[in-house]
Image 1 (tube, one colour):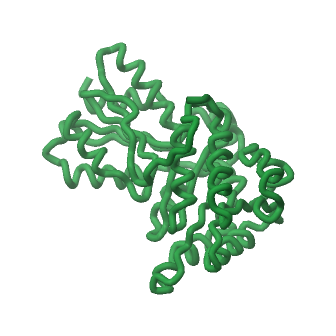
Image 2 (cartoon, one colour):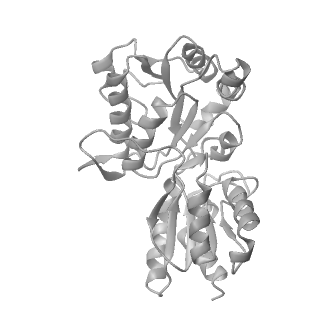
Image 3 (cartoon, helix red, strand yellow):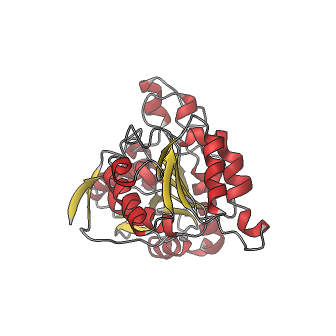
Length: 325
């Protein structure tokens, strides 16, 4: 095993797949000469050249469309958004073209494309640069949505995403690029659509994903000192969701708390809540609790931002609520 930063895991995944398959290329703003806005493509221009690591104008609609079109002639593009907030400029290409080409062509045109970049809040970036779009894209049939929380999962899942014949939304976090973790020395992949139980426990199931899962770990450590065991599930993939892992855990713990960095209406935790109460109503010993952002645009003030984001204290309160203590 070796220790790498999250950004290095992303770079390794892309580079290994580009060495393996000449149809894979990377395109986006500042991915080449600048080595990536967050240095996730450092050194790739030198190795692969300007025909496969391509700097673009500031036109998400343009380079997203070029990427989608290139899949129809045999390419496997990786499209980097400097932030998924900017994906809104190109969302027509993602939703109305990438997600639908296979069905509309009667299966003649698969669309093996990965759209990747950071999502959600990352400090004082303001309301228009701090939005979580996971549930937006997961709502669309034809897309797969992946949100890893650590370098190991990021590399293994990104390699699988690049090899997938369907469009994949791969969401990261600016606040995770410097996170360090162990990954194998050799090649490995991880299956899309499989959640991971990060911590075993018997008293309550905690479900989360992405960078906010760190708050679940903090909460679980504090609760353990009080004799409360939390089972933490990292979804990793949001479409398709691994419901089976969640359901089996809730059958054991009989209680569920879902932590998600998103507005409280119409999100991933809402969908999971419905699924669990619909299939495991008789197993539940307490109503399901969700821990989400405040239902407002993201504030710029650091004091307000701290209040706006979900945190470990809210998770602890939710756990104690479902345990009636």
